[in-house]
Image (cartoon, rainbow, N blue to C red; front, side, top):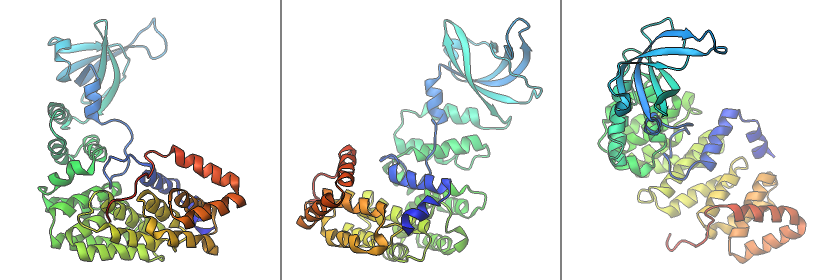
Length: 395
């Protein structure tokens, strides 16, 4: 019961990473941490009006309820809604927003109803922030192709304003790999290396940065990635998957063998081997031109003997419709080390999908042993979208 039990003991944040990897959106950055909420650009596009300025003259309404009142906004820039504003320099917001610091700036999102401005969100902005410039340009290029927009956001990933920097990262997190694949070839590798080495760089960004370096870097940059991967102190950090993939992109033969070694070595931490599995999935889904799919299957099969991660490998083999390894998968059912519910279900899911006669026989044997479990797994498979349907036409 080691595999399932150990994962039950994982901290909540590690469980979150697993969920991201297993159930994340199909079309999103493969090496980015999941980012909740909309980007600022989308929020601006949805708002009727977005204003930037200083809040002053906050006053309570003596006849109103608790906290009711009004606050003036001295407008310094209009991100959106100039036609509605009609050149007004000061407007009164029907909200009491106490502030003693007249240097504080705010970005105010508003709706307009029956000619009245209704603010619904305010973001404090540092006086020297690039927020207005950032959002104005982001809205201007909203109709441009994805690579053009992402190149714009790349230039703001290290912005001093954390709100801007995180928003730019969120744009990448919501993008498909193909959207930044070719664009990344023209990025400055030394700048990215600096980000990767900077201890102040948030750990969740390392995967994306490494992935970018895998496209614009050279063999010397591959050694930078290798050095980081060998650093034991960073083994449980985010980004190992992106680093492994990038190393293999820059040095396909050596990098792939190195990644394969991570999958094979059961003594490595679970999260490190899981990161290697995620990197292998990347080559399967997005870059089979770099690593042959037969090699990817063979590498993932190295995980089958490891009872803390075998179920994930089995699931990938099922989704990839690799029925040629059916004997290897079914053999796990007879291993005492693998006699845990999570692996049993994975084997059964594989067997139910596989057309091999041995798999059909296994299903029937399991049906006699535990008909309810088989029924439950069958129902879950029916809900899967899209289900594995047609076998591959080529390897």
